Image (cartoon, rainbow, N blue to C red; front, side, top):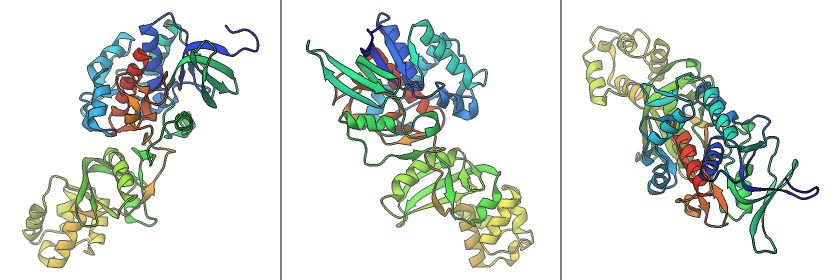
Length: 417
């Protein structure tokens, strides 16, 4: 311990006790157990994001993880980090600390207990076993590199709870998503003060989309179904297509397909005029639906659509196409048929925004990977500073991919620090 009035001294200070920070601490201690390693976290309780992830079940990883499941940094850059601590190694690590995982049909891997607490408790038990110190209510206000008279380079870390001086530092503060858990963007500001340039845009990803007030789709709250979402430029050029489940909410749209699309919509609409459409029958082609409507005869259109879609959605689509509920195929005009095909397969989604960082599962943007040595996760700007997790410009699609980035980048930072 330090003398009175002198700053506390440690070998490695890890700022942020989330998924990436805990992995960095564990692997730093496993690599060199003789160092004093301290985790500094501003929250009263550690690991809040782990506990709320996956509806309280914690989607630890996925059965198959590739660089193409991520955006932000280049696929080649992401590949270098994922390759150092792979999905099989992640499964093996968690089994070693007492967390067995099960695979669901979607490919997501959850703890067999279906409780996120299992994951957090195992990680914390490992930090205790390794002698890692955790200081809560210790929000880092500033980090300053200092050079001792001896020539030794150190970091001076200040917080309301006191000063700490460390030889090495790991920034694992998260981004800006779910700020109530502590990831309120302050870590990004710390990185900027230390000399890092952040990406021009930092925005929420994996976030529900809002529709305009009065949009009829908001009356379908609670309905979930498979859909295909297509994001296009005004010219018709396709930007992104995503298949998956969609959930109607009283404010707009959610569900895996919508969450995955949100980052693409936000990234594109800031630069150009874009159009987002939904196909409510993803497996049905335009030609097939037209043929089915033409051959419907005396059967009602509503009856045909109700065989495949929820009744409330069918009523909404017929109203959108200006077709009476009981109209038959034989009475369908050419214009009505065209409108109905458009409503079913290319329904325009009048998105006005997102629900923001408050509920976003991850942050898009951050510290560019070009400013980080990916073999060590050490900053190319400041020697002795390592970065990992969501603070980096990497965001994955839904399904455990963001946790895998946290585990992999945390591992690399930990063994290298």
